[in-house]
Length: 126
Image (spheres, rainbow, N blue to C red):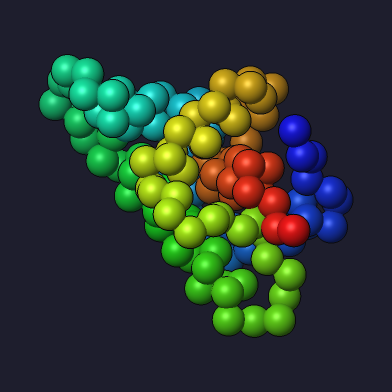
């Protein structure tokens, strides 16, 4: 598994800080909500609350990715990650959930930082 190098981690922290001071929670909240999104993808029955969580997660992960793309995609700055063509938002959520489950020691960190860290780990640029 690829580990984020210190310069890359610094870029991640700077990039996500640009999204504003109001954070939407930590990795524990992210894992809970995104687990509902995986259940939705797997056609499991969801309560109305779980459905809201699933929709939130799909939008949140896509929004973080869109923000990173806007911040880094049009500049000469090294990209934080390179998602291959054809990867769906649902696959991105599965990557995030797997990464969070494999790194329980990181769940106290900001959700937005963890989304970027998980995508950078799964989709390093070559």
